[in-house]
Each structure stands twice: as structure tokens, then as C-alpha cells.
Length: 76
Picture 1 (cartoon, rainbow, N blue to C red):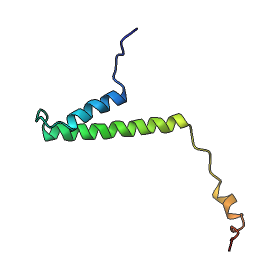
Picture 2: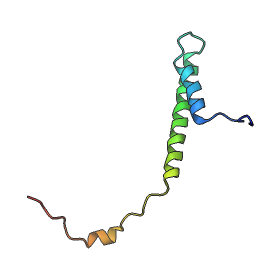
Picture 3: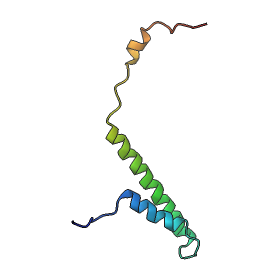
């Protein structure tokens, strides 16, 4: 089986979490901050790809048509 060339987003986020949660002092506060920023960027990228997988949203009803609808009935 061919070895994967790149890490998945989950693998990258796991590695970044290790940096951010470091308590040994190996990483500076600046490194932790950079890891947090990169993790946030990857999370947003992951969320966007999930939206694309769902497909486009169905088109809404045009405002001109909504203006001609009667008001909703009350159930008092």
C-alpha cells in the first residue's frame, strides 16, 4: 500500500493541539498562539468543506411573491 503524502486535517489539528497544551515548556507562548490560530483556520476550512459536501441551499422564495401572500392565521 502506498504511503500517504500529506497529513489529514484531523492529524494536523491533533498535532497543533499537542503544541497548544504543552506544559513541559518546550514551546513558547508565541508558538502556542500560532498553533491556536492555525487550528482555528483549519477548523474553518473543515466547516466550509462540510457545507460544500451538503450541496447548495435551495433557492428562497422571491420577495415579490412573499408580498402577495395573505398574513398568517392566528390560533387564539
